[in-house]
Length: 541
Image (tube, helix red, strand yellow):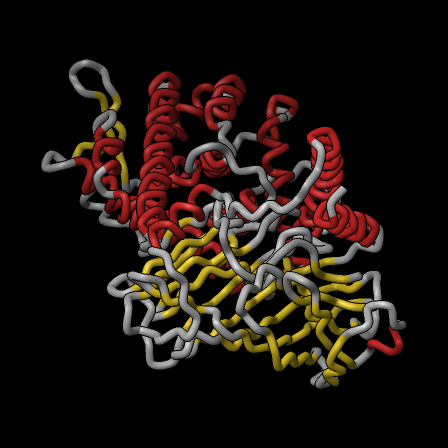
């Protein structure tokens, strides 16, 4: 078995064993300042819980002509670690405390420092990298893996920021792609920001590929190739550098073994992540009869995504449409052929600014001159307004994160005890609505509460099921709440779901088109082959 496979197995075994002590990587932030000659100053911030091992290490392989130097490490106490030069991984915990160093290998280096003690730590790591930028025949480029797969714990959140003093990174002179993770790759305020949208998998990484017009930088390192060949290789996801010499049977056995361990590790990591949001195991959550997060649909939708409970499509839009109907901003009518139409109550005006107002305005634009939104009208409109729809999807995420912070439901990247309680209430409310037929009639005779049941039912993707249960309990009250008959309401639910799917499809298509051209947008989990830096493994050992 090749050395690469052995190292992969060792890294996964280390991660699996350390899980028994509940290690965690809560956040990784990487700040990369690029200089005119193509070198870079990298500063990394690691918010972690150390539960085993004697040291923390970062893998930086596939360096080529890149040289890493000037390693500096400090921790949350302000202690500046002493750089001892060549690092000895076999020394004791006590010897490594307050020290850092570099292990030099055939293909790269490992940046190491002593963990000091078990428990929570915040490490700041800085180092320089020469020849990060490459001068190509037609453009200059950066192609680096900044966060490696196979870390001892799957990070909960990762952010990489690239910038250069006196230079603005934007689409007038740059292009950018993100690979290896689920998240975003955006030009923001003259900088490039790569950010994850959820917890990493065991095999997630962060690979940045940037293209710069000639003249922005003057890299020392040169490569005789065109940028398109680099991009093609990255989009294919193959770097063509496999040097292993394994028999097919041995390789297959190793791969199957790795997959099995990765599955186990992923399940364990997922359970730990869910527990960090709920404050308990998922199966310990009980029924909850009232809407969570002060009935905030935007926040509830975001937390559902974090819990892996969101439905297919943008169910948030369906829920917001029902709420606007109950609040009088929208009306439901039928045309001469009995088809459902959505009209706009101009006397009521536009909902307050934010996600709901933006959705209302998009629907109004799609309705055309007659201001009546007919079947498939929004789907046709959204197909040619991808940027506007995509901006709405991003606004939903931004507003959710802002409200979580404002209400102290989430502090930094941790859910507070109050936030965990509301998250349990969210999951419990979903369970309650799914088991609604078990309720007694006397507990459900309140019109305003029924409205919330239907709205959140739409968010959970079970509005039709909730509607049927409510109608069976009290048909008269159901008609009063929805202001239409049951059949009309079920068609309305279908229509709102179609609109939601149109939002999802339009946003995804727009993001794919933008990312493929390097204008920013969603990152790609696969691909990225041909990068420098990175490798496999890292974390505690």
